[in-house]
Image (tube, rainbow, N blue to C red; front, top):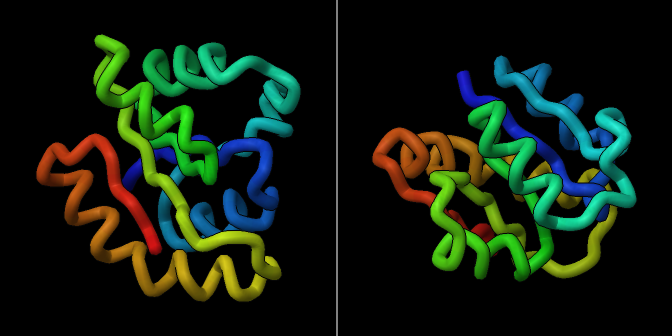
Length: 110
């Protein structure tokens, strides 16, 4: 079971979907972090051992620049409807969890 922190620009539905698939998932909006700076989300993820799920390239860059061992799933799929996003994530989730288990800190999903 993995703990995920879903970034604000992604739908709350993704966090709920992850929970329904056996993971712990929180959305930035639910944590009152919707307007928070990236560094605050980063620190929350570090403190709670959460994997950030985002479309924001800044988090991908932070993986190499910051000392905290935060992991990031960087969705590079462009704008799409929620159903299409969930379909992409469902297809990618086995590979994501495997890569996380192997210690990979930045996972790009295309």
